[in-house]
Length: 266
Image (cartoon, rainbow, N blue to C red; front, side, top):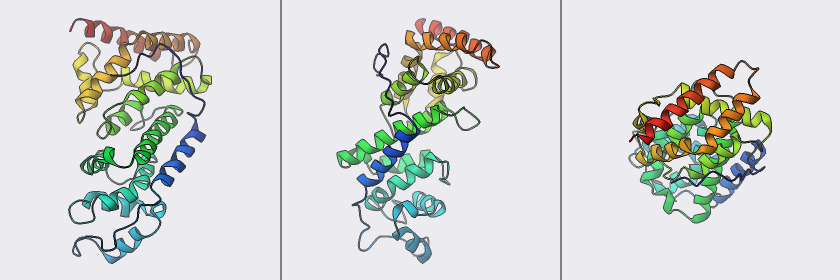
């Protein structure tokens, strides 16, 4: 379950620069992973050019080669060691929308490789990278296929506990961050409440956001029902009352109230 969100824990490290630092730490944590001396692959499915490109520095592997590897790893091209070696590259490509497969496929392959059982420093840097990536997303205005709830839906395929991410969202919509950060983070919350599969009078529809992780819906529901989120949303409505976003924020407040009321009736 997500933590109680009453106390502010805003961390100035959660910034675009913080994302770059988490990226560097992620790459460093996997730097010692080497390719097997005799990698397994199907000669009919994987070309020599693919193997040559894959054998170079992981952070330089082209998106098309990395994406082809994701489709084939565990079957006709490589196994856990190869996947482990390229994980930072895959996460960085996914973060920049350069991966040519859906992120769900990447997470399914990482789950199959039991990535949570990898060395603790690697797991820690993956977790930190995801928080940094999410905060970077919250610093930019939502647009089609670029919204917090869509991102959480994909990441939840491989991440059971969303509380660090939801805490970062809560901190970002509050009074402590730079107003521009708070505004864009609020817009992502408004997007969730007004333009997502979530139907406020049917709280169970929150599960439609997380088809691969049933517990994630309960975590997001708890986040939305926390009184602090309602307070932050109403503060944003007041601060942006003269902006073009005013009407939509007020619609989001009304829908949040309906969602909370319907949840109490369950």
